[in-house]
Image (cartoon, rainbow, N blue to C red; front, side, top):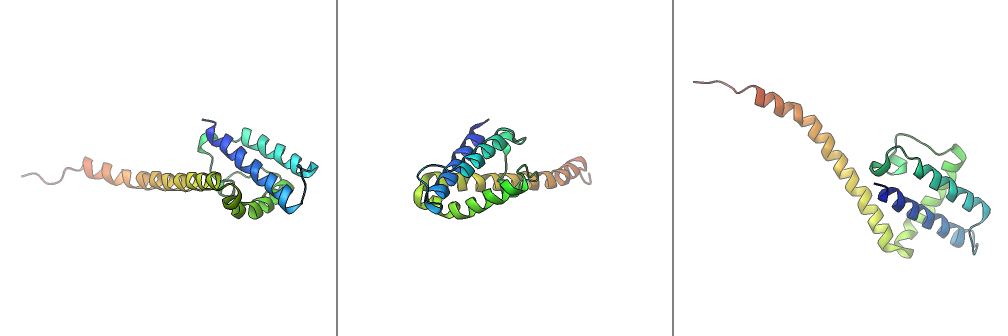
Length: 129
């Protein structure tokens, strides 16, 4: 169940590390980036959606504080496109997983909208001779 959370931890950790090294030109994580990394891990550990966790920007619950949310958004906007260059397999797997969850969610919503129609059709057998 925690596989999705662990994968998101790995992705956010790589994004923060890339940002700190390449954008801020630090050899190791600076104090602010380390603080953000620990904050992100704590939020992921406490995510109420667990394995069914949506992408953070599509989540109905914003669990990050205002300042931390602004920092992580800035880092994700910078590092997201670069993930394909530095960590292509992780970036592609992450993108496919989120795309698959969106397709699955839409299929479930469509099924729940159509189910009453099938029930109504089955309960009304039609004219008999």
